[in-house]
Amino acid sequence: MIFGQDRGELRQMYVDAWKKSSMKIVLSPLEAQIAKVIEDHPEYHEMLTEEKIDKDFIPEGGQTNPFLHMGLHLAIRDQVSTNRPSGIASAFEKLCAKTGDAHKAEHLVLECLAETLWEAQRNNTAPDEAAYLVKILDL
Image (spheres, rainbow, N blue to C red):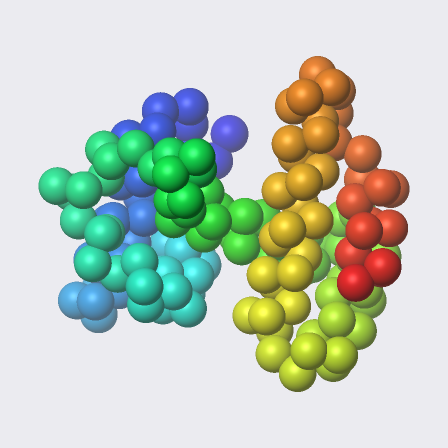
């Protein structure tokens, strides 16, 4: 597993990647991916400090978990680069052309991914890749 199971460790990876990027320190390939996602989300920059990484984000209170959000972006970028599920790369390319903005397209796919993961968790099953791809194609 790339990140491990500990929430603090995962969040610390984001803080460290952003800090290194800000200081122009050479990044590992994974750190570079993380830093790019963070760069694309200036609204999260101020919370990427070691003092704030233990914060809980409560959806019922209208709070978005920035670490989950950025993690979903990373997952989508990985899926597109590996074309898994098969067909996602071309579906994403079409969505980018339709929206005119890769980040906007990622946000649309992000909703599909979050819903697919939620359904799998609710049903105690593996995520349904075929249904996920259909959701993307229907955008």
